[in-house]
Length: 166
Image 1 (tube, one colour):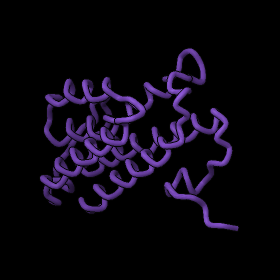
Image 2 (tube, helix red, strand yellow):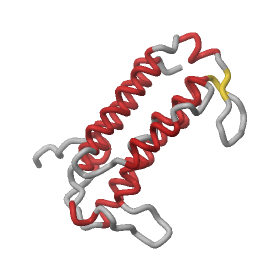
Image 3 (tube, one colour):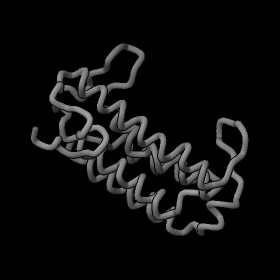
Image 4 (tube, one colour):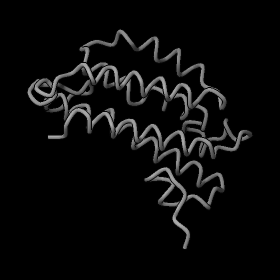
């Protein structure tokens, strides 16, 4: 089973990569969307500020008392404050998970809000909060590619760094 600190580190790494990619968003394209039914770049940024923390807090605390606060934070997203808001999410995730024992992560049963079989709390957080951050990081990367940022590749998407010189 993944250890608590590994889970925290993985979530924080996803946030670091998201922030790295977000620096490449053209300011004039914040309201661009790939098609009428999809999120705009700005809406994706809003969602990213709560993607990992919202579900994780629900699973850890057993309630949604945090939902209004996270929605307000998301609504305040701008190109200028996005990294700060992602840092707030990182701090919230770290705070929430550091308070959870290894035994609780391994032994407490958790059910996903949308149903399905129960699993350990650690697996539920990994299968939701961590995967949400990873999946929406990939969506951000693909949006950037659609906006013409063809210089972005594997190193930027998966490691959040510039590629090694050839």
